[in-house]
Image (cartoon, rainbow, N blue to C red; front, side, top):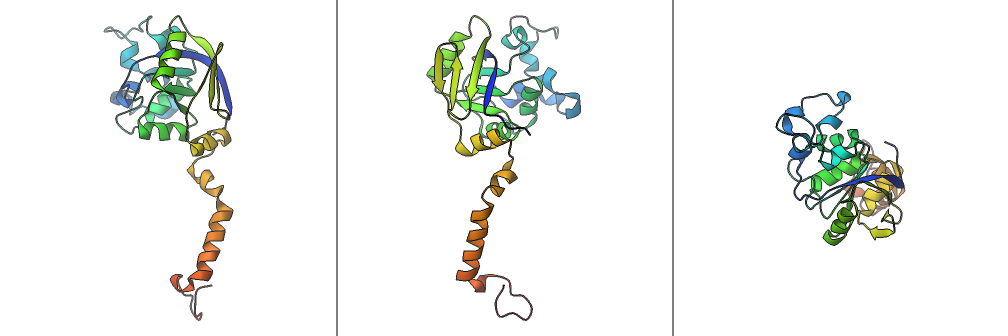
Amino acid sequence: MPGWSEHVGTAVALPRDNIDTDQLIPARFMSTPRAQGYGNFLLHDLRRDAHDALDETFPLNTCPDASILVAGRNFGSGSSREAAVYALLDAGFRVVIAPSFGDIFAANAVNNGLLPAQVTPEVAADLAELLASGPREMTVTLESREILCGATRVSFDVKDGWRTKLINGWDDIDLTLDHAARIAAFRDDRRSAAPWAWPRRPGAQYAR
């Protein structure tokens, strides 16, 4: 997956708490092949009325090109379905800003290049207020952990390891390989300090 250090895009606000993974993509769509795209399933039941027509007043429907979502607390809670992240990505989103996230959702997001940017409830409310009148351009910078919207500049939190993965486009294996030299040094030191702990090869007194 390609890495990135700064994203400039259109932001929309959905200031609701507890948007869980079943809301992000209802279970009845889970059998659809990913190759067909999950974007149309994102928040399907919230975005449509009783007749399955798009609700023109729903924030995501007013700006189909949005790539940054400002949401409420506990975003992505619920089941561990990775398809919730796929739905956001396939709909064009690259950043979700919220006061808190479901743990598994946040990890799945990072592994797919989607940033879960954690802010304080006050910052989330301020950003949502800025977007209350409509979508606006926003810049999210991973290096400085900053969000810029007009004259408003605020900070967000993201784990160091997650930030490294997003910037470099790494998965968990890549992140481990970045420590290959230290792992090899530990192995060699351990082999010297406790040779008895290593499997013995035929004909050798100790493992080599």
